[in-house]
Length: 265
Image (cartoon, rainbow, N blue to C red; front, side, top):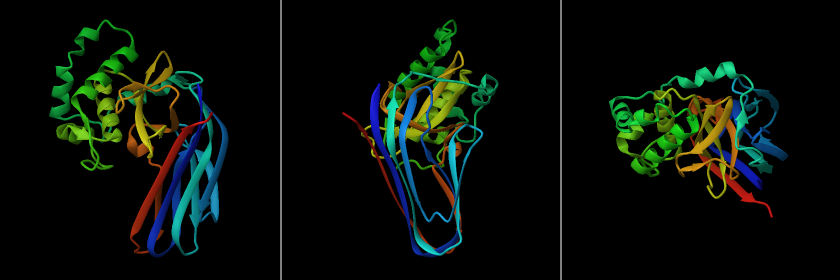
């Protein structure tokens, strides 16, 4: 186990005043079997009307609205978490795991990924009952055959498009791994969170075995243990978008993000 101090700060600056700003935030880590949030502070501006809810995946959400004109918007989430309490998270609604076996628009394979899946020779694992071992094998193959590179993909890039480039970032690694795992019948989900030393938000994958979710980080080719703080889960990136909003105005936006996670001594 590790005790981690974390901060997730995002600021939007508008080139001119905007109003009637409505936003939805998924930026709040919650206590699970794997992590315990011991301290949590949030600061949001503007915060004229704020309410908190939970979405269908169990993610903590903040809804906000401000009618007043403003030229900036930010949220600042700070706290402390004990991570690695368990190596898994229990599924409290086992009947819902089937949802995570289906491909989405972002994970649906084309010829490139289907050919790659065939080349992995997963038939050798047909008698292997362990979902984790099959998923680890997929992760290790992906780490070997895909390269980390910023600036070549975007938030709308699909797993197939990223695979055809053979380069991408954590979101692409995760979408490709989800696609491959789902082709193998493995229930798996996308995770957004924070990682020690990353400096930005991070993404990884969870797979379900015996009604327990285990995390795998394909970008770093490692099991998720005590250095990852989980924020939200979903079928893919679109279910875990940290900030979504609309406003009245024609302003351009400039976004700054700071994510800091450090181990406490």
